Image 1: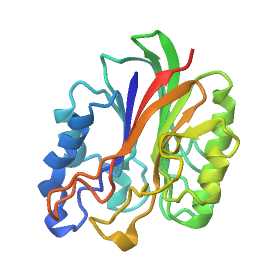
Image 2: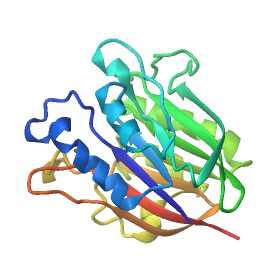
Image 3: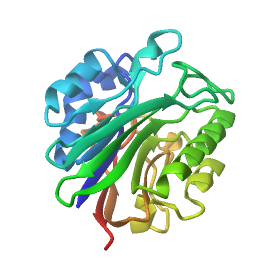
Image 4: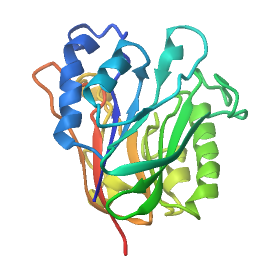
Length: 259
């Protein structure tokens, strides 16, 4: 089995009052520990005290991320991937920007408000010896950029899905009625893990703006190639009164290899 979690942890400098990072960081860590993922994709993790906290408390998880760059404080934000050392051996890792010039740090395209990155790792699943590619990303929220990001990701994945099993986690800033979702899942080469277990699509919102029902949207996804069977998929809605681990609920999946 492979346990996967995608979790936008909300950047640590945000003025979130009672849900400021300093008040909820141990809660966020506890939700990761409660699931004990083998693969963990984070979004909005700043490379400052926030990332230091994650690294210091997840010592059994190598951490790979890159600053998205650009102007201002947001330049330190990352969409890092982590994997359990006992479950996977790293073969190769890399990253690029979601733009027409993906190798240029901080580059933007398609009307993107911020530079956006993708980090990937080629891994060997140690219990089975099977290889896979794990991808984590965070799309922009401008509609034209969401479409551009999705098309770019689809084209990149088409080059590797023929050769390797793929698992993708991310905050896609788009719901499941969007063109971006259809572009990534419409041909069946990538499967929405949550929809495999909950095909009705009911009650699948992950973004909640710290408990505001009117803001809820299913924008965090785990996508897997047809090499995997989805055994379970859930959204972790744990909170303590008005205190939440983040303004996004983590989404989780349990996978197994197909024969």
